[in-house]
Amino acid sequence: MTEHTKQSEKVILVGCQTDDDELSFRYSMEELASLTKTAKGKVLIQVTQKRDKIHPATYIGKGKLTELKALEEELAADLIIFNDELSPSQMRNLSESLQSRIIDRTQLILDIFAQRARSKEGKLQVELAQLQYLLPRLSGKGMQLSRLGGGIGTRGPGETQLETDRRHIRRRITDIKAELAGIVRHREQYRERRKKNKAFQIALVGYTNAGKSTLFNRLTEADTLEENLLFATLDPMTKKIVFPSGYTALLTDTVGFIQDLPTELIAAFRSTLEEVKEADLFLHVVDSANPDYFQHEHTVEKLLHDLETDHIPRLTVYNKKDLMHPDFVPAAGTKSIIISAFDEGDLLRLKASVEEMILESMESYHVEIPSTGGKLLARLKNETILKELVFNEERQVYVCKGYYQPNHQIKGEIKKFLV
Image (cartoon, rainbow, N blue to C red; front, top):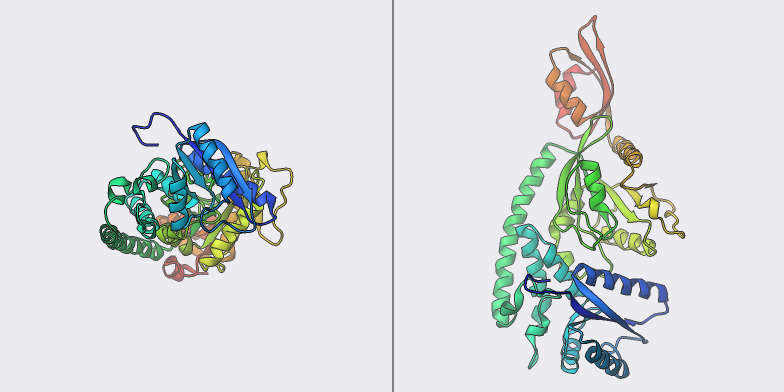
């Protein structure tokens, strides 16, 4: 909602069911309602139709369109949101038949991203995705560009830019891509530095609103945005996480995945997805209270597979156990843990489970550090998993047993102290 908007925009949702999976369709309409709420819209009514296939010209059939026109007038709707991506011709035909602004699911998600992007990179990526979405929709006589504006709050590129010609938009796309390339280079250098320091990297992944940010805050004592809204987190954030043994790793909170995520966005949010690909371990957070949890879990696993990350070990974290859905059953054959992010005991159990998984990728060491080696000892506590530490008074040495990452630079530094 823009600053000058006094109240929520009144919205009609429209969905078309093309298969027999009644439940999935219902959940997807509920998700569209949640997305609308996140974008500060007020849903007045849902209009649905079951068809063999989506109508190529108007998405819904002629009779249903007449019904929609009557509802639009009666309820004085500001906006009509369609549950699938509309083709340029469908958008044009619907705009001619209806008075309200029309957007589709893709534009709605783009609008939420525009509202929520905080960093310069996030904002540029949203604008790029919006412009790439709008470009093919600029053709055709009499296209009312002002009614195509960036979603509920008409954010992002804004109407003035949309009413310029395609050449201007193409030029802007080229400029944004060049700016983003510079940011990506800078981030790659930063990541290379992090790699050199060999910090163990853990990525929180999961469906939007599964509770990743809450978990991130509880595990790292950070203060990222926690809201019961879709896409509360957009820009990836990384903080230190300290395990019971004192071992320190890096934890990254990532953008929530969603079913049918627009391709423009998968391409645009490279930053988050690159962070995901760099991880040594995934914590896949699943909302066990959501009735559609199984589909959400499957969506994330498919996207992770598409990103070619199958080789990265993962632990499935079933969150919100206090609100667990009565039909909930953990997926078979996956390493998993059931927790509530608000339960201290559960967080300790989670940290212990993660530490066990980290251990599996490590090598053991047994060293004797002289009493003057306090600095090295402190590094062993933070950068390795120290299982045993005893001071031998007779020989004035610290006897240390533990585990380190195979490529960590500490390997060279403790070489001369190995027993």
